[in-house]
Length: 509
Ligand code: STR
Image (cartoon, rainbow, N blue to C red; front, side, top):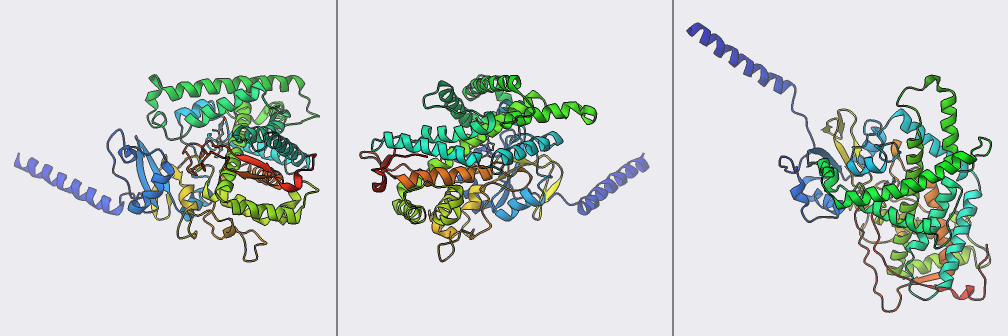
C-alpha cells in the first residue's frame, strides 16, 4: 500500500516537473499587451460612452503603447496604431492577414461574403478583384471616356451651383449625384437626372447602410442579438432589400441586351467573364464558380464604395475650405494662373496644380475616409513585430493614429496642405511614410485612380468658377466626423458665389 502511494506521489511529482520543463521550453505566446477583460463582454467596459472608436483607440496608446490587444465580446482583437506594423500586416504578410472576420451586418450586405470588400481571401475573390481591376482600367484610366463623363458631371454640378447662387445650399445631394453618375456610367452605362425617384431611393438606402453596417456595433460583437428585435438590423434589412431590387432589375436588363461583342460597362464585363468561365468549365471546382450572387455583390460593392467614399472626401474638402478661406484663395490663384478663364480643367492639368493636389492629399490625411479600414483576420498563427498573433485574431488598423502620429507629422491636428509640397511649392511629395489613405497590399483600394480623377476634376471645376462661404445666419460646421464604415461629415449649408470673371460667361463644356 505505502509502496503504491509513494509510486503515485512520485509519478505526480514527475508529471508536474515535466510540465514545468515543457512550459519553460515552450514559452507562453507573447501576445501584445492587453486591455483588461471580463468573460462574455470582453473589454467592452472600456468603451462605455465612446462612439468615436478611432479616437478612443488613438488615445489608448498612451497607456498600452501603439500595439495592443483587447476582447470585443469573445473576439480577440489586435489594434495597430503604427505605420510600420500596419505595413507588416498589409504588405509583408498581406496574404496571412488577408481574411475578413464574419459579421452579422456585412454578411447581410454581401450575401455571406460574395463581394470583394467583406469576403475572405480566396481564389474566387482574387478572380473578382482581377475582373474589376481590368474593367476599371478598360473604362477608366485607359481611355478618355471617363474623363469626359466626369467633366460632364462637374459641368452639371456647376450649373446647379449657379442656379442656386448665393442662397444657402446643402451640397451633399448634388455632390452625391455627380459622383453616383460617374459610377453609374462605369457599372451600368446609365445616369440619373436631378429628382429621379430611383436616385432618391438610392440616397436613402445608402445612408441606411452606412448608418448600420460594419461599425463594431453590439450586433456584430454579439451575433445572437440578431434573433431579437433590433432597430439597426431591421433598417439594414430594408435597405439591402431596396438595393437588391434595383440591382436585380439592372442585371435582368443587362442579360437581355448582352452581346459579348459590345461590352460597355462593369456589369457586361462580369457577365462576359461568367459566360467564359462556364464555357470552359472543365477546371471549375464546386464553390469556385462565379454565381449571379457574386456578380451582383461585386457590382454592389463597387457602386457603394464608389459613391460613399468620393462623396465623403468632397464634402470634407468643402467643409475645410469654409474653415480656411486662404487655402481656397490659393487654389483659385493657382487655377487662374495656370488655366485662366477660357478653358475648363482637364486631367492633364494635375501636374500644373500642385497646391490643389496637396490640398486633396491633406484632406485624405486629416480626415481619412475609413479611419479603422475594414478589420482583417489572421488566417494562421503569425506575428506582428516581436509579438505573436494567433490564427483567427481580428486586426484593426487605426489609420487615424497613423495619420495623426506626432513623431511623423508636425502638428498633425493642423490642416496644412503646404506640408505636401516641396520648398518651392511646385512639387507634391509625402513628408512621411505614415500615410496610407488607400490602404496597401493585396486588399488595397481598387478605386484609387478613379477617386483621384474625380476629386481633382470636381474640385478644379467648381473652384475655378465659385467661391464657397458660410451663408449669412449660419455658423461654421464643426470638423468632427461621425465614426462608421466611413467617417461621416456633418450636414451643413454653403453659399456658392460665382467669381467675378465668370459673371458674363455661360458655362459650356
Ligand atoms: C457603403 C454603402 C453601400 O451602399 C455599400 C457599401 C459596400 C462597400 C463599402 C461601402 C458601403 C463603404 C465604404 C467601403 C466600401 C468597400 C470599401 C470602402 C467600406 C458600406 C472602404 O474601405 C472605405
